[in-house]
Amino acid sequence: MAHVLISPLNWGLGHATRDIPVIRNLLDHNHEVTIAGCGNALLVLEKEFPECHTIDFPDYPVPYSLGRFFLPKFVASLPRILRAVADEQKNLEKILSKNQFDLIISDNRLGVYSSKIPSVFITHQLHYHLPLAFWPVELLAVAMNGILHGKYRHIIVPDNPPGPAALAGKLSRPGTVVTKERAFFSGILTSTRKQTVKEDLDYLFMISGPEPQRKQLERILVPQAGKVAGSCVILLGSPQQAGTLKKSGTCRVINFASTTEKEDLMNRARFIVCRSGYTSMMEIAELDKHHALFIPTPGQPEQEYLSWYYERKGWFHSQSQYRLSLSDDIGIAQRPRYTGFPPMAKTRENVKRLYNQVLAQYLD
Amino acid sequence: MNDLIISGTLGLIGLLFAVIILLVVAWSAAVLIFTAIAAGEYGTVFAILSALLVAGSGYLATGYWLRKKDYI
Image (tube, rainbow over the protein chains, first blue to last red):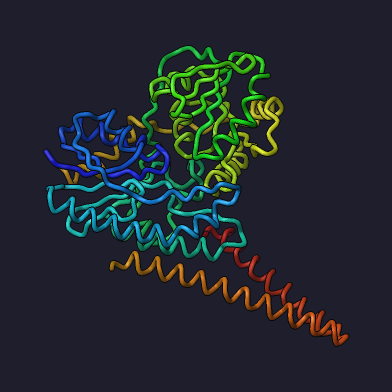
C-alpha cells in the first residue's frame, strides 16, 4: 500500500471534481490518500472521501475580473501568484517533512512538486489562447509551461490526444519538447456519471462560474428562460441561498443543487444551456449529450476559445451573453449541423488506463 | 529561490519592458507626426504613418503565421 498526496487548485470546483475518479481509483487499489487543498475544493473532497486524511493548504488568489476584461487583471495579479507559489513550496516542504509520500499529484497547483518524490501534474491547458495582438505573451506562456512541466514526471491531460477528437483543441496541444515527452492524454475525467434514466426534462439551464458574471448571466437568462416552451429547470449555482425554490414562468428555479441532484438533472435533460468551462464540457461528453448551447464567461479567454472551437467543429452552438436571444439560439443549436462531441472513451475506462500506464509504476 | 519563480519574474519584467518600449515608441511617433504637421512636412507624416503601418502589419502577420503553424 502506497501513500499519495493529491492537491487540487481551488479556482472553482472543476479541479476537485475531476480528481474524484482518480482518488476513488487509488482507494480501490488500497492506497492511502491525503488531500491537501483549501476552500470549497477541500470541502467537496472531504465530503466525498471522509476516510481520507486532509490538510488545509492555501493556494492563490483568484484573478476573476469584475468586468469583461479578465486578461489585464490576470497579468496584474501574476506577481501575487508568483509569491503565492513560492509560499506554497515552503508549505509543501513542511508537509513533506512530517509525512511519508510515494507520489504527489498536483491538479494545476504550480508549486506542488518535489525533487525527491515522484510528482505528476494534472492540467488540460498545455497552451493558452489569447487575442492575436498578444501573441508574444502566448509564446512566453508556452515557454513558461515547458519550465513548469519539467518539474514533473508526467503531465496528465484530461483530454483525448491532439487530433480531431480533442475536446480542448489547441489548449491541450503540447508546445515544447519537455511537455511533449511528459504528456499523458488520459481522456476525459469527471465525477458525473451516466445513469439509465429517461430524458424527461426539456431544458436544463446551469448558471455557474465566478461572480459577478454568474449573477449577470442570471439576470439575462432567467427572464428569457421563463418564456421557453417545455419543462425546464434553472440551476443558479448560488450556495448562499441553498434549498430555496421559486418559479420563473414555466421554469423551476433551484438556487443550489448538490452534486447528486445536479448529476440527476443533467442525465434527465434533453438540452443543456451552460458556460463553456472545460469541466462542464467533460460532463456533457461523459453523458453523451448532443444538444447544448454554450455561453462563455465574458473576458475569459479559455471559455471564449472553446466556444469558438466547438462552433468551428460543428459540435455545439455558442452565443455571447450580451447577444443572447434564447429562443432563437436554442433553435440554432438544435439544427442538424451541430452533431455534439464525437464518441470517446469515458471516465471509468480512462481512469483505469491512467492508473495502469502512469500511476501504478510509482505505487505498486 | 527556484528557477520557476525566477523565470516567471523575468518574464514579467520582460513584459513590463515591452509595454514601456511600446509606449515610448507611440509617444515618439505622435511627437514626430505633430511636429511634421506643424512644419507642413506632409511627406514626413506619410513616411512615419507608413512605417507604423508596416511594423504593425508585420507584427500581426508574425502572430498569424505562428498560429497557422500551430506554434501558438
